[in-house]
Every structure is written in structure tokens, then in C-alpha cells.
Length: 222
Image 1: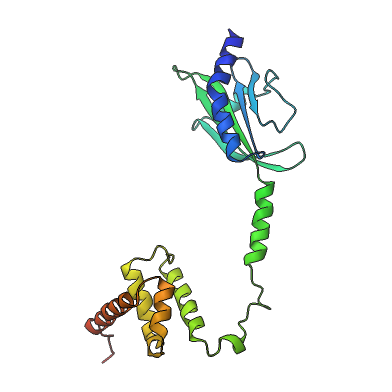
Image 2: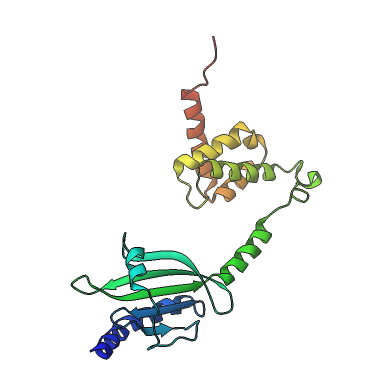
């Protein structure tokens, strides 16, 4: 009976385990514990010496406390046999009568992601000593002003260039207009290319932006 139960767990969950480990090859281990036998039913992409049929060594009383508020445990931290940190999560599997029958554990090695994150942080960080813009290159380049204002406007509106909608573009063009960008020869072509719209669209949106300002003049103190 126990062997039949374990075979059922393997038959049902091995495709699931294979799918999970295929998503991030070499970095994910999936283990299914049979709670009725206290044995490991399945190990996919094993990161430890344990194999199917080994004792699970799960404390059922402690497990009951861990799952008291739900059927999932974690995420929590574990460590691989080489000392590498792992991010783990466990899901309780119950039968039709809601009796616990198995525990599905997914262990993700995060060392590679930590290393990638550190590299990205180094690539994107700009130390204060080197982050100052060279005046010789940007002092007279109004295009740099456009780029900087665009960055600020997108951040303020919490959007991206790809996610810009009509009100966002109008707000951006208003900022450009107030800074006198459109007084510069050829600026409309550059702004159109930056916003990925036609020059005719720039003029139409600019007309709407100016009309909005004209209809809502700034208040003055009496």
C-alpha cells in the first residue's frame, strides 16, 4: 500500500517537478515527501545526496504548526551542500478528505542571482566623483536638456516612454515648452524622434498643451 501511494505521488508530481527544474536548469531542486510513509517519494535535480526512498526526517508536529495558517510554508532560507544560499518554499498536498499526504518542496539556489545583481549594481551605479556631466560636452547641447527633462517627467509621472499616454505626452511637451525648447531651430524634429511620434503629432499635442495653460492661467496674489 505504501509503495503504491509513493508510486502515485511520483506519477502525478514528476511532470510538475520536471517542468519547474526545466525553467531554471541546474538551479532548482524539487523534492516530494510522502507524509504517510515518512519517506522521500521524488527528487528532481538533486542538490543533496538524498534519493527517493530515503527518510524525510520531517517533524510532523512541527509541520502542523508551520502550516497552521495555510497550506504553504515560506519562502524560507536553506543552505546547499556547498554552503550556497537557497530560497525555499513548501506546499502541503492533501487528499480528497483534506488529510495531509505529501509535501512539495522547491529549493532555488540564489547565488547566481546575487552575483548577477551585484554586477548590475556596479554597472548602473555612478559614483559622485565621476557622475558630474562634463560642461564642455553638454553646456550648449539643448538635446541633453531635452533628455534630462524627459527623464524627470517620466519619473514624476511614474511611467516609461513605451507606456506614455496622451496626457503624459502633453505634460512632457508642456515642460519642454516652458523651458523654451521649441524656440530652438530643429527642436521639434528631435522631440518627435525622442517621443517616437510624428512632428505633426508634436504640434497638435503642443497646441493642446498651450490651450490648457491659456484656459487655466496661474493664480496671482492680490
